[in-house]
Image (cartoon, rainbow, N blue to C red; front, side, top):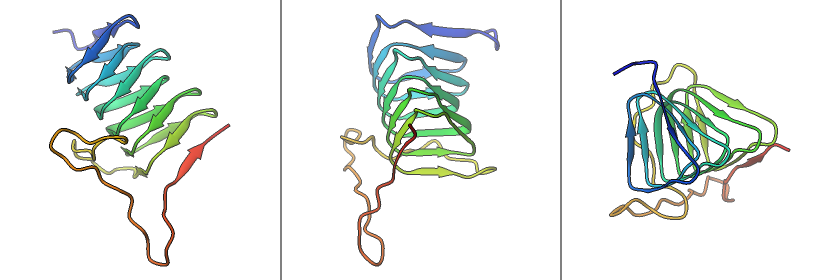
Length: 147
């Protein structure tokens, strides 16, 4: 296997199920399921993911409805939409990107490959989690669109 190879999935492809990849993956496909990559993952402008993402690094140009956990860096590009929680040591957030969910960006932290169930539904056999009410009342649900 060539460590510098890149896999491409075009926009006319729909995948239902878990996608696992050990080399760079660029996807413009519609994916309903989790993505696990030990390398860089790019969700293209036409790409959509309904499921959790665990990757070494991720660049999102399209839409993701699920939680994202990365080991190195997450990039939310200008028209990206992330509806879910984010855990990353580093985050690059371009103007026009949208993040609706909770984020934990901690440089130097090694995030585990376990993520909470995606928004709008839970993984099979797992109850969905709801936001907690902090002391003093009020529901904390950050919405962070940059326009």
